[in-house]
Image 1 (cartoon, rainbow, N blue to C red):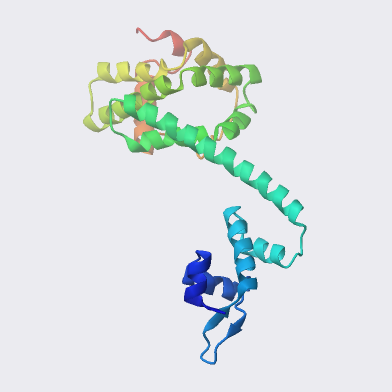
Image 2: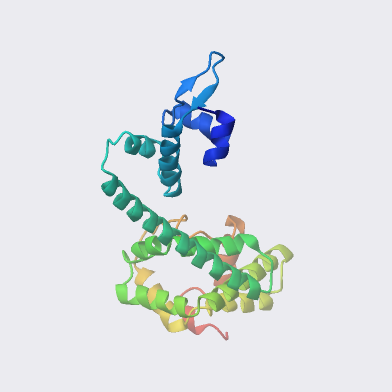
Length: 249
């Protein structure tokens, strides 16, 4: 027989873990002393080896319990666990790709604005949902063209986007001169090719009472900043029939 301390050393498990496994009913001690101390035997070592293996394979406590009681076929459980871990792997790889992109953008951007960077990361994570929303109003060909263009130049486009939004927010807070504001507005609009912007604007032109999902398309601006920006766009003839012909006047 082994005391809990001896058994912990022999199996590499902590005393805390052994107590936890006892409480959960997946590794009960072989006996208890008169004083209530746990005692383990060699059969417990085999059980501990199984538990360590299941833990390494990322099975939950309830799954371990079922496997130890042989309530479910081991092979089926292993196949199911492999499938689940492959999904986790895809998810982790997606997170790593998102982080790599965010780091690349942040290393190139000329301003320190974490909120805007996080909005860009959020857009990466919700791209499929964004596409589904846009496809309700815009032809698939246009949507694919837009996202294809963005993917080819993602870091540069979002660097320019973050800087333009940041500069417009500063312009609002500092009540910048008209010419500076006009230049910044076009700096923001010119991030996307004008012909593509025209196609998107045309697609939305006749949509009434459009409710944009702010979860999928969060604004980088506060409500006051948005109102000011709309007023400035109207003032500088960025809105209206000459929307795309007003860049220079």
